Length: 357
Image (cartoon, rainbow, N blue to C red):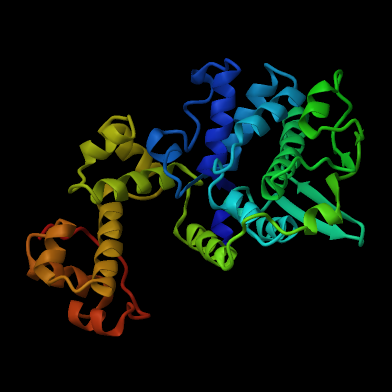
């Protein structure tokens, strides 16, 4: 279930990988900690998708400190099995490595920006070639690092699936020739690397990828594909400051009744700055709180058997009567009718002024 809203974002797991590489290479945190999606509550939440621009900027900063070849090798070494979540296990748990990498290509959006990154697979009978197509507008060294790392990651996961080191027949990189090649040779385990190629690709013997995966479990791939779909469906893409604000507001609502002051503290800004920034995004605290309450109450009515008093208490309303007034204002109907139909009327009035009950 890949939505257009996922485009322009990557998994928080991939962003964490870039942050950890930057730390290991001594990039001062104050150069990137302010970037969108790097607050701990977002970076450590596997259901948050951070802006692709955040990872790109960290990669740019890192390649100013170290050659892109060394960065690609470091990223591959850090990418132990499970680092990238369900995507990793799609490859290692399939009946064959070939089937696993096909699943990984189908669900690359669980890790990367599906708007710019594509994994293509071609087989000619004796060989299987994996091509990583990256269309992001990156500075040159950052682009080289991303493409070289992607190929190294595919090789590592396929080797883990086969439970033996798979040496590629050929590697091509859409990258300018570096001053030193030793990191690339260490990354791929071969000297057969063609640089300045039109496409970045890695080629294996078909017999290597079509051999049965040792100790595979029947039916596990189906479960993992379903999990990948659910992960995408539940993900929260962060595209803007407003996305960050709404994520913070929703997470605090799950813990307590949010206030302007508590959300401002979560975002590490003053209440005055929070109100001003909301106004710059053509909204207000009252409108955002009302919208969040509306979504929350609608989900509780549809998905639970809680009483109206219980839902009101969980949503910041004084009692069931205040809740009924709010639902009538939003949808022009009653909570009971909304619960029966299972969906809001088409003529939803939308959030209006906040009802404080």
